[in-house]
Amino acid sequence: MSIDQRTRLLKDERELGRDEVFDEVIATALRTHGDLAGRGAAYKNALPLGLSVDGRGLTLQVRDGVMVATPGVDDAGVVAEMAEDALSDLVQDSQSTMGLAMTSRVRLTAGDINEWIGWEPILRALFDGRKVHETGDVTFRALDGGPLDLDRTFTIDDDREEIAHFLTEAGFLHIENVFDEAEMARVADDIDEWIARATPDDGESWWATDEDGLDQAVRVLFFYEKSAALRELVESDRYQWLASLTGDGHVHKGGAEGLVKPLGIVKGLSDLPWHKDCGQGRHSYMCNSMTCGISVTGADRVSGALGVIPGSHRANTMATGRDRELDLAPRMLETATGDVTVHCSDTLHRAHPPVERPRKVVYSGFGLPLLPGDEAKPDPRYSRAARAELTDVQDRISAADNPDASRRYTPGRGR
Image 1: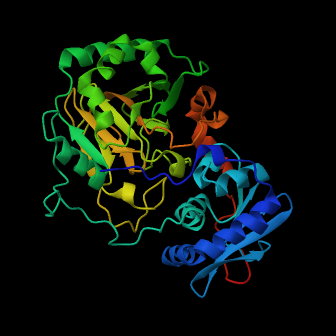
Image 2: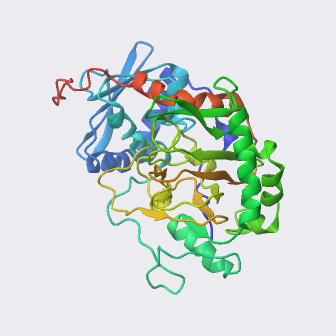
């Protein structure tokens, strides 16, 4: 059983110039996957996409069911302006449509941010040959061939083959009673200590604003290094067995983040909306890693339980936000103190905002080893500093959006 969906090697990433992308990379992709991408764009009813890079433009659109490229952006319904290094990253899946917005590397002059990120699965179809999800593509089967019970929970003593099969099919797990309340109390104390130490400019925390206008720390970055109590639990057999669950060779990343979920947050990265962990890009280099949530205080419907969309790790769909036409139904994972949730990095999930009680949770996880012949390359966009800077990401996304997006698109006449 495998959840490894990687199709690219890190060592193959390189800097591509604008003309090489327009004249060679896109042309080759259209010959190879133009029908697949055209089907996806038509199914999603996507407006033509214009890419404007350093004075040259190109529009991707569907003709007779096949995607084609035409010079210029006059007939595009969505126009994205970017530098050639951003274009290079986009076509290589080094950064996604949303990833470029989150790092201030794209600006929309036609269309809006939702139409722009709606092109992400279509671009992955074009450049990576991954079919855009259509209704009915994903079904769920148990090991015996019968229907899979998506509400099932497990313990560490359950049959590992059944657990692995559930993860492969559904893209998530809920494992009960992994740690006890005393162990969670020690981790909770460490979260409280480091939240109290946090300052807005420390580069090691994320902040959010509540309905009274109060800014408060909601996430401690690099928590694995700061909490001996957490390290002891993560390094124990009760947690590490997850690494060998699928046989893909997952290894613990050696990192973790401690989160608090206060009441009444109105701005900031506290209660994250639907997203995939590869939503910034790099699906074809990293998925599926496994993200594990250790329920330090437990979570239910009034204290901000985790939401997941079963099967979405097998669906090439929007990686940030939930497609309103997606035929996969969400689940809420209500946990007790000491439970562990697992979700694949390509599984859509969200943090429901707590409405009666706050909660605490730690996120850590397991990544895939390098593919044979691959070489690890540091990427400054995923460094410690870049991770910390995401605290103001909402402002960056707003700055990338098009203030004139309300103007209607007319085929053949642009906006």
